[in-house]
Length: 248
Image (cartoon, rainbow, N blue to C red; front, side):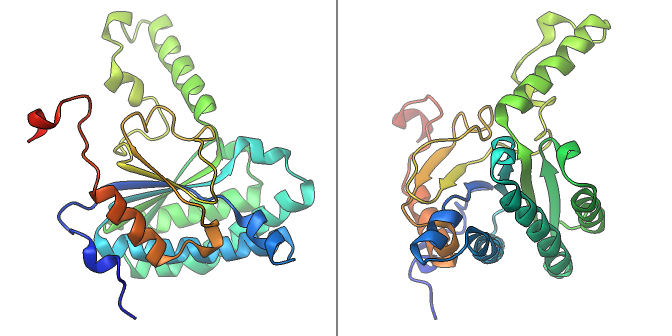
């Protein structure tokens, strides 16, 4: 079936980096009278769909907020189910990533992840390191405030040790100490499920990102919804503080 929205996309103006807050798995499951874990499983399938869609139109970086530091406070059974799902998803998707020339990276406090999860992640990261078509960035055990604090501590340590002058600290120096060092800032941030907030995600990096909020719960956010978001993005005028006349 042809995609109505995909046909409208200008492939010369596709965002280089799209970040997504994948929200609404639990609500989707609750509405259907299902267990929350089933919602997370359908959410994993949705991410596979969106990854394909992003690669099809030439997106180079796709960052997904998969598990926040706050998510550790959820019921233990749900956290354990999420970790198990993460392992099985990585095992299932690694060969697919390789076939499609897609690299996997991770950001966040990975030291908090269970050992089996970390081992599977590192294995997938190493196996896909040479891939160049697109990079998937999974934010796991991630918090923007945590990331910024880690950067501040790292910079303070360099100053204390005499390896960095305070006067030399600038945007680029600060960004180089973030988990996302080497990854361009997102052009577009998508959040599903009707919530209109950032939830501690990439606070430094999204300073000039376009924001797209949709009421669609994440398990229902498939290719057509992704293409719809891209079409909306392409209608925006990105000025970065300048006037319309200046950017023309």
